[in-house]
Image (cartoon, rainbow, N blue to C red; front, top):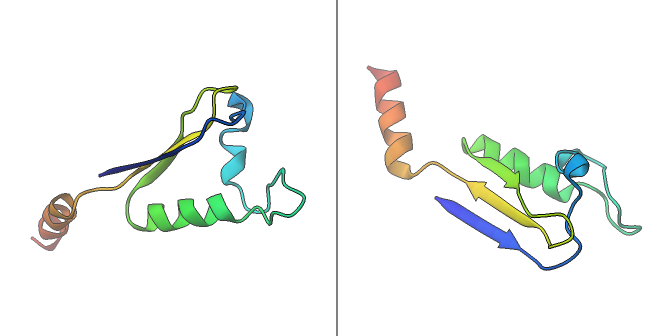
Length: 81
């Protein structure tokens, strides 16, 4: 399953795309820098991934990729065998 969030703001420069997922990294004077780190942690706990692949200057686009229930059930069944 894929979930996409995007906007039309200024985007994220290529060299900072991985940085935005680190805990306590923020560019906002009122932010804690925990939001995306928590999102990534939750998604990875469900065997998924989070990718930011928007073009700098054209907004952000976060893609959350999660395995389907059928994929997870098959993997669990194979481990149990």
